[in-house]
Length: 136
Image (cartoon, rainbow, N blue to C red; front, side, top):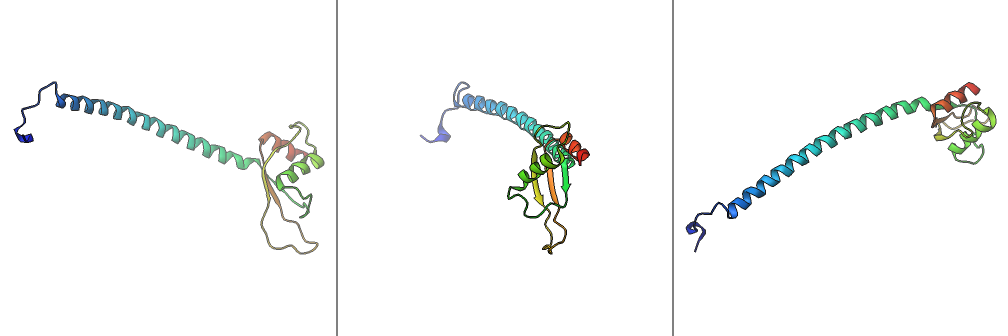
């Protein structure tokens, strides 16, 4: 017997199951759409917060000049931390000033007896940076 000759569906049959399934899926979709909106808002808030942190981090940058090119043999971060502790001994900051990153500014090749390339460093704590600059 073909489908076009099939008896009409009863209210409690497959049609009702399909309608119930569609209603359930619509409810789940509405819940998921609400969650997507919440996650989008949360993502936006976190992006703004990240931009704020990145914007503030440049305030912790320090420029160090006249350090010999081959000083120490340490990584640049450790070299800057050691320079601050040995030469400046800043009062009022942590025992150990932590440097996030440090590198020499790229430049042209140096001539013997010429000036040294500047070191840029970012200190983790803004207060430590201020105390270090005052000690310098």
